[in-house]
Image 1: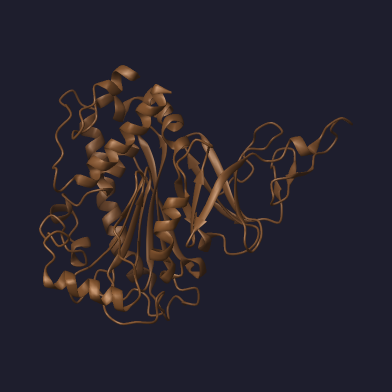
Image 2: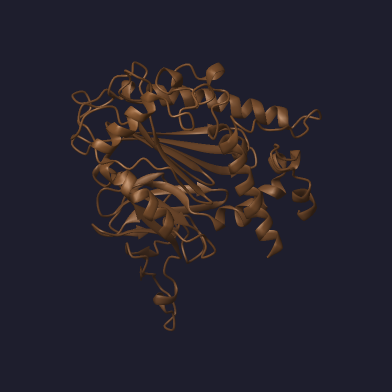
Length: 394
């Protein structure tokens, strides 16, 4: 494995086996995914006590459940008796977690409270659910599967003041989808970290986004960029950028005359997440390695999570959030809310799958990234290599 990673050239795509080898995938599950904070959901997905969601990462399932009004917990979704899955659906609600096999029963705090016909010396306190680390920041849930993860405090310090005005802690989940992509997870994430392909493949997205490969608005600072920053300041918003080894947060403008990330540019929801203030505040984007990016606008939020299942299968979860009191059919139309990202995700699915087909062939050799237009891909690949190689060294 060390020899394989030693073949990597910074600024280039990875050697073929890093995209196609099942052994590499198994290594990544331990070396990368158990050593990272994973964006796993939103408080809006577990609004009531007992509500839960599950996420699948390779062979590992995790259940995230609201224990109380103020506490969300995560556990490995595995019974402590004989290892059966406890929660077998993507989401649900339960007063207790009951194993479907032999009915071992756990309270929402993970404590074993019922195990029938066990020996007299059996101690239920030694057989509670195994917890995973769970952090919530501004309504977004992150989990970590081991203790060997970066400090979360700096990310919280940066994201919270930027995202809090959107009040996702009190939003509702309007819609979610799971899109299977038959491609290696790194190709899925590389694709999501650049817009080099947008002008050719994402006409819907570019009805709302300025093409960053054409508009150098951060370094050049045109007048409209200065106007955007003034509007955000007047709205009391923090724009960033804020960057860390595993995160990237920035508020940036969308096109003139466009109010939201919709096909027609109109607001997706009339009941606004940020009801006060005036002017176009663009979109707040935060991206976290290894598996997510999200956007929060004045009217709604969207998140993208990539969950590797095996070396050639990645489940992409798309989620749309709106104001907690918004009503479908009155304040928003689901088709209008979801159309832009549904189209973009379908296009990206084809791109990632086509990329995976090509990478598997005899003609594949690692190629160079565009330093300007694929900078975020380079950052992602460098983070991935640093994380994997640090594990090999240890």
